[in-house]
Length: 424
Ligand code: ZN
Image 1 (spheres, rainbow, N blue to C red):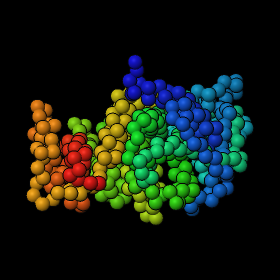
Image 2: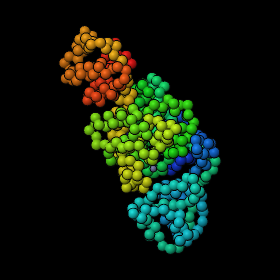
Image 3: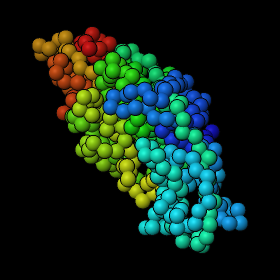
Image 4: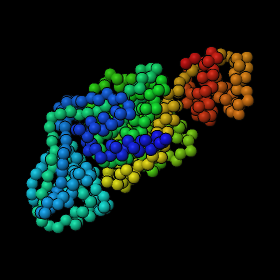
């Protein structure tokens, strides 16, 4: 039997070779594979569609790209790695001296063995990305350059997977699907989101969970533009990215800073043994930028391991399959599972017998606990829930104030609810 971490890594390995971008067949092929795990509703939004302050761009597809030397040998080859072509390169077919080619070549002089990841979505350009050491080894001379790409009216593609809940209020989980062969910066997040969706499927959760697989920025903006009504129902959310690197878990708060999702993540991370970081909101990073723009100001935080641009492998060929591990992805998945486990049960109750303590023994609420090693904690949890269930405090508030584990507090609330002593 493989572990969920290994299964996620298998998914990452399958997705890795695909040439994704903000539009095009690479995104579709990616969603096809995700769709083998969870059913997806795929949306195709035509080029030119106005979405908030943006316009859906032309669709980009690429078949081949290379630089060949005078002997015809490919010295830079898209077939070897899709990072070699500047994302959204316009087509080119030409022969030119190296000096003329140089302005189109992107390298990382500080990391001479790595190929950078570069794009030019909104300015028509062509270009190649290569290791500085490859460039340094190129003799002067004439080179053939070819980018066999198409930029044409088409569609922007994104997908949703919905796990219906007991209430229409929604939790959104979003991840970007627009980076080519970069394992941590997009694929690990896709894998964790996919496996989280699979886990939730049979659980009959309280909230409706909406998973969004969309290209960064323009995809989230497109979704928001097309779901202005639904946004009212989005109560909580998490943007998942950089979910598989060896660094510690980092939670970036929502713009509000004290949204319920922020308090849930703080509680779950503090209660766990994990080393972690919690950072304040910044209007940069991933699609929390859109969900937390002031007009929406949703309770959406961002969960990563090492955050955006915080590791030397970021946006380079070193963000590869070895950089992400089954264990790290499984740990990120566990944080999501724990957080949504708390969020989904965090409700306010009203003590229906608030004058003096109700007699628990008569209702079998002591007897039910007899012999349990955690009986004392369970009893304390009941007393705390009864005392603080005044309609003001939710179970998470009670857990924090009492210092008890959320699970104990929630179990106590279930028992008191079954005994008719509290109501939601
Ligand atoms: Zn990125």
